[in-house]
Image 1 (cartoon, each protein chain N blue to C red):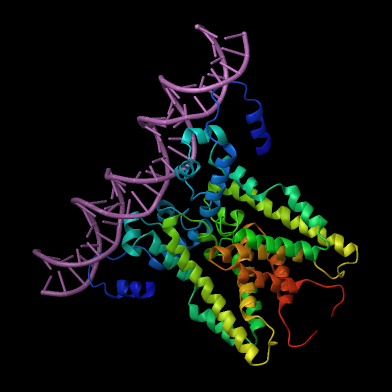
Image 2: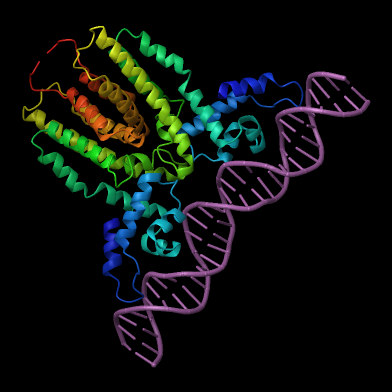
Length: 211
Length: 211
DNA sequence: TTATTTTCGTATCGAACGCTACGAAATAGA
DNA sequence: TCTATTTCGTAGCGTTCGATACGAAAATAA
């Protein structure tokens, strides 16, 4: 919906004074600020300062703070089809989980981006009137877990995993570890530390008859 | 230090108008509010309303918002010695990890308390001037991990774990899963769901020669 | 050119923020 | 009783919050 909103905004423009700033660049600045400081603890004046625009420009271009955050979250999460394809196209569910978790470490400890996960940090706390934002963010997580669960069921049906494998628990474990990694990353853990944790966690993966 | 502060406050009192509210009960109300809404997103007026006292009473009894939160966090975390003893006195490090994680599920999904972990939720986001509060909360986590790591080293030395076991990674996994459980609990996951995730995670535990 | 449309910067709006000055009220000690 | 001490409730401090009203500026369309 945000995408179509922007399309409409950039395609429908036929007259009027042109925008004097790069909308995408400003959105990325906003995303980085939300990533570092969270949703409610990032103020409009913080945003306008970082984005290099005034408050009225922000409201004209992005609606309000809530819609700006949702658009920033979408920019952070990327095209959902991309992640889904990565899970679906991996050789095994194990490879998908390993790729996702090690990729998360890279994202969470990147030197040019804030530590941790935007989706985990931005809405962990929040007042009552931000509950809908929290719910939308939780939906991103739910979507990842469901994709992983479906992939696990597929592997079970294909005999690549024992029938005793618990797809719901394993997909939950991947999500749990990923969110936990965000906390440790924000606490300052090194990528090497986090990588050894992920490798250990993946030992919980069932194998098709090793033991 | 908070404890000694309170001792001094309650023991040194020799004259003056007596306090008209229960300090411990008010602190517990504050803790529950920080637990649910986080540190910065809980306002003084939220606190005074829930605690049933006025702002000047709050400041007289607890100092300021930061010190009130730190005291609430200490009430939440409990006596650190208790957790340390639980880890040290468990039959094995595995039992300690299992007890901690399943106990965390009970805490994170209790029906009379907010979902998730106060320490995970309260400071996941935050502005720059709350960095010291975040650092103190991170210290709670670091302490748990270090206790777990020490216990794992002890078990390795006693031959209860293979020498190949990575104590740092395993202790990190316990902490990672625990923090991840908090996120899923806040998203509304059931204790049964979380329990199956923990049981799966514990499959990553090394054994003294099963394979 | 003239009219229309959109964004621009300036200057705020009312509300909520963390926090406190101040005098009345309630206790203990002299 | 009188004084010292502490907490009480009222009222409000200065600041920041998210969000806008308004007229000038800059583009297109007629």
